[in-house]
Length: 237
Image (cartoon, rainbow, N blue to C red; front, side, top):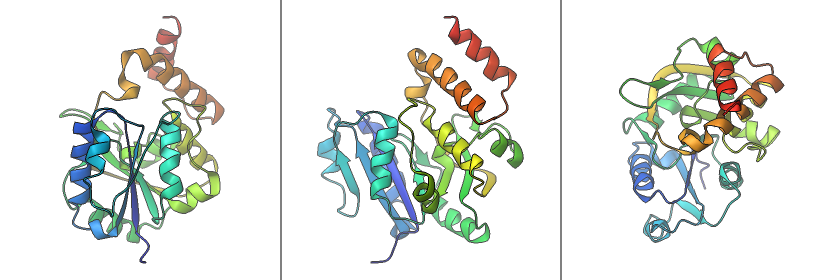
């Protein structure tokens, strides 16, 4: 069996429409034969399981209750065998069918542990909002929907901490930086990010900013004025 070059992990819960969009985007890639696709469902009740049963046998999937986002991510990591791994959540999709082909070519030219790109949120917003590679890395401002992580990174430092309900990706990238893994940022968009997820819900904004501040203080990541103001604003609510 040929080892896949890219493993893509999609976690989902009661988002059948979004999941369908994500699956179509992945299996439509021109280099799909180089992809290992894994879907981790948190025991959805909206018809997701029935949908998963209709997918090609090449797609690996699990549907069972989990302890949250980090646990779901880590379940996918236990299955993944690709040289590089991308977390592409339910509802997210690639901007075109050539993305993975281009990423594989970029990876050949940039032998790094983490290769990161921009993601599109809406017509006016992309993440990261700045294009300076040093700033992106120093602030650990990497969108996980646009960041390919070498499997050796996960093998060396493990997966995502369940200590964090929302900012587990920031925490993971901060650990990567603290361990000295190599990084390259290419400021071109590859993914449409579906807004309105867990981190964007009003009831979770306090957790978002407090967890973010905790990570930044622990790993000496620069704290911006926006970080500080948002942290104080949600702290006193």
